[in-house]
Image (cartoon, rainbow, N blue to C red):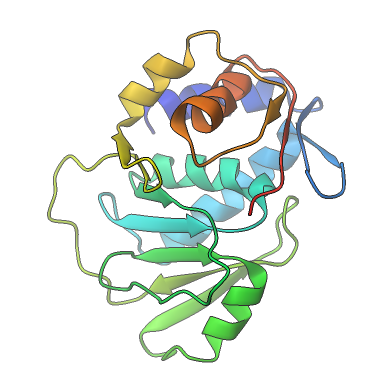
Length: 208
């Protein structure tokens, strides 16, 4: 566990019964306890699939409420997260690049019909933030070759940052009660982390 993830989890525990994050679709508020439970489920599931530090995970989901816990769980395991908006077209499973991949529910259901279950596993989790959450794991994913891989990659802005850089930047006063673009570092990720570290209740706009 890094300094960033330790601080994030500590603040969630301090806000155990307090509303932290609001769902953009139903307006439901999730407490620190809700997020901690989801965090544990995501981290444990990835661990059970033997995803290793330095490997990469793609998050391209349409439910933004799951993204914070997926980010923290991935960073606790030392994974590099590529966070990209969901495509309107059916994406390819980039198994040569990612050990795990999370897509929208509709895309996941369609892709599940195409995969070889001997090579790619489909995992389902009952999350507070997403009762129908599912993701793919490449059982034969290549082992990492880069010793110091970034913690986060944002393809839209071609940005790569480490956990230490994220923590330093998020400690600046960048809170926002409404986050509209999680795929941008300055207007999405940093305010998200700042809110969780403060902690400050906030809402997420629907992802495209």
